[in-house]
Amino acid sequence: MLRQTPPKELGRPQDDGGSLMRRAVWNQGWWLHAKHCASPHHGPRPEGQSIDMVVIHSISLPAGVYGGGYIRQLFLNRLNTSAHSEFEALQGLQVSAHFLIRRNGLIIQFVSCERRAWHAGRSVWQGRSNCNDFSIGIELEGLEGLRFERPQYQALLKLIRSIRRHHPIAHIVGHEHIAPDRKRDPGPGFDWSLLCREFKSAHLSFPEMP
Image (cartoon, rainbow, N blue to C red; front, side):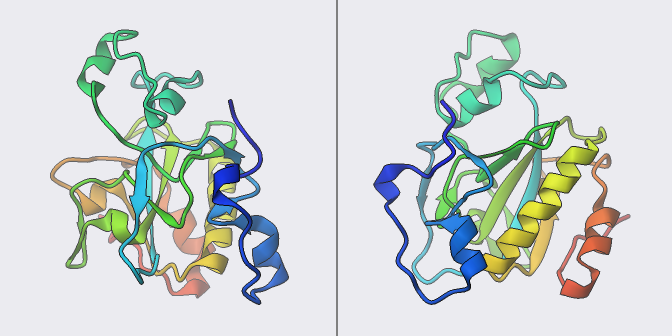
């Protein structure tokens, strides 16, 4: 069941003297504008590790089918892999992302941004490996290579802006850029130029486009 408040076991954050806006929208790494559905698939980040990267993914279960609860079930370790032939390869897989953005722009958060979600896998960016350690993973409901919806971009931009007010984000990349031997998402259907325009003055690092 989706929740609009962070899990009780995380408690209330201590007032560290940060801005009123920061305290108003984040609670122990949970974004209060998202629906909350806590995944068991997470772990601690390395001690002292700053969070300076956003990794954009795409996902649909089954491939090209939108809506329904299969993605949520996957991240919660509740997916019945016998429900569809495509799910057999997911048997025993333990994955998660911090956020999922549905086709209509609804944002669901599965893991606190203070925790290490299991979204990137074996990965490298600019000589740094294990990108899960220092990144926030955002899944867009969609199929790699195809286009995404306007409400998804609107939600993504709002989310990234808020993340940047809370963490020193310097890089925004796709899963395909940090694991090019394994992944192709979000693919050529994703509008990187939109992000580049929106964050032109922020001096963020984006992957080189062909």
